[in-house]
Amino acid sequence: MFASIMEQLINGLRTGSIYALIAIGYTMVYGIAKMINFAHGDVIMVGAYALYVCIGVYKLPVLPSVIITCIFCSVLGVVLEKVAYKPLRNAPPLAVLITAIGMSYLLQSASLLIFGATPIPFSSIINVKSIVVGGITISGITIVTLIVTIIAMIILTLFINKTKAGASMRAVSEDRGAAELVGINVNKTISMTFAIGSFLAAIAGILFICQYESLKPTLGALPGIKAFVAAVLGGIGSIPGAMVGGVILGIIESLSKAYISTQLSDAIVFGVLVVVLLVKPTGLLGKIKKEKV
Image 1 (cartoon, rainbow, N blue to C red):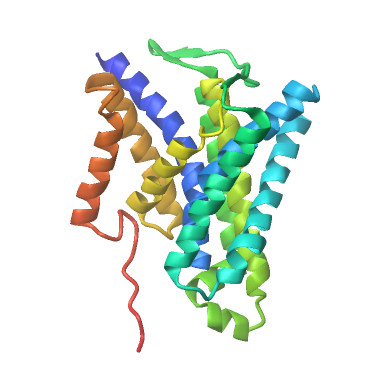
Image 2: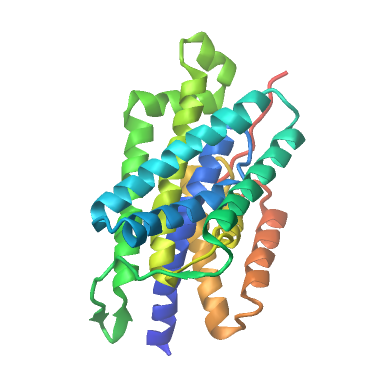
């Protein structure tokens, strides 16, 4: 029983790590641009198909394919911001929200037209052997996912806290008007935020299809929603909150599927979110910001 629970916890950490990578994109964009980019989940899908095209169609080696996929998604994130969101920066929040949903369906429809609706099988590019620790089997994909996620989190944290660009992002998040007054290029900072978020989404997409080994135009929809839930659970706008929320969500989902019901696991995940928000509306690590009049 103990070994079974530990295996489910490890599986939850693997899935939660993917959610955390996606949730960081949501929370960074919200913290700096004050908008929810609902097309972010579909960047995962674009990254998955980009990797498939590089490896399955053009037969490129794995490492160049991964690099091309991450760069492609970063550029896509910047293009989405410039084309769809920048013109609406001073528009009502509802207009931005509707535009984000529209961009999500646009990406899904474009993938449907290009690749079709039939799921495409994809062999995992991660060929790491499983290890056994104390009677608990840890798969290779789990090991790689945890290592990649930890490295990505450390690099992102150092970038935000130790670099000039990171300081600019924190300044824009705190007060956009004041940041402009001290000479920070707000447009450039917001574009950089979309690029970083999309880069992490590409990594999440690669790890996701290596785990499930199948591609379809809607593959990013549900993980995107769950990652948004993770961001809200941890405290929207808080990067550590997105990490914590993603891990908690993954563990809850894994334990629910194993010991309660696979059909009810999603309902349980969203139910936990409702309970947390009733108790702490700002999320686990979110803070209430006082508005100065």
